[in-house]
Image 1 (cartoon, rainbow, N blue to C red):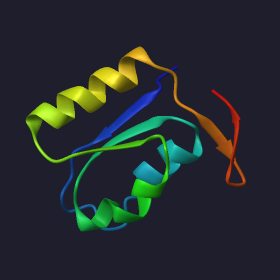
Image 2: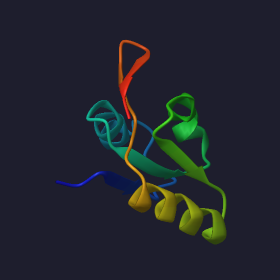
Image 3: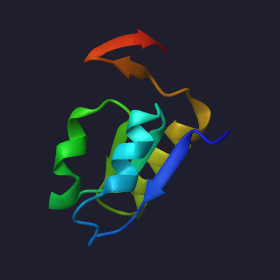
Image 4: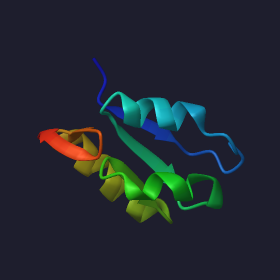
Length: 77
């Protein structure tokens, strides 16, 4: 079972796959881009602006467990 979803796209305007990953309680590692602005409010969304930040986000996601949220509140994690 995977716990990290990486979406490096800068053109995915709908970003359905990112929404699905977050809804399943996974980390989503995404670029700092207007199409990802909505997801920034979710604690499991890790946003990067450059290669160094991407590495930091990915390492964090791989060594920790994502938080699970339901109806705007943390359930566990």
